[in-house]
Length: 214
Image 1: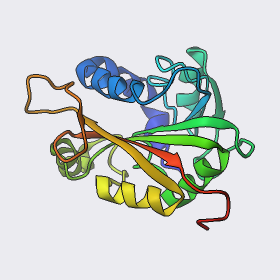
Image 2: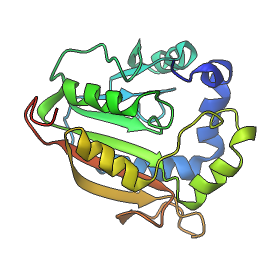
Image 3: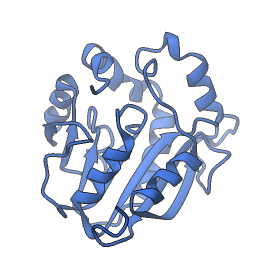
């Protein structure tokens, strides 16, 4: 069952996090924006309150939380209540899919990646943004997870684990970038690769024809 209870109870508080932590939010948004070519039709998986979809001009999304989808709809996004493991879209519907801090809350990440693969067009790609488990922020979240409304039930992943899963389920890594350098005066600095920044973004292209990797 999708881990939505804290998001149902604290949806407005979740949305306000982006205002309280604006520098981190803008750093994450900036690195993602540079990986999406203009004019592409995308979907956000785990759209939450639309904090990324709206500025990135993504018009379609899914989220299992009723409260979160209500907030996204208020912002003009077409949102379906659904889980990542069972996307309500036809095969080959989108140019790209976005998953931002979503992978740590899905129940079955492999099935979710299979579904994303299915709804992407042949030249499509996925963008996955997450807090690296081995980063400073990732370690901090894990140490305080029992006191956190949102991360108590989260599953944290290292960058290597995410790369391995993407490759295993039909994607070819084309770009990795990192940002949110907590010990730097330029927290929104962007670098290629991973291992220093706390927030990692991976772009991976749909690599094979259907059935080749299954």
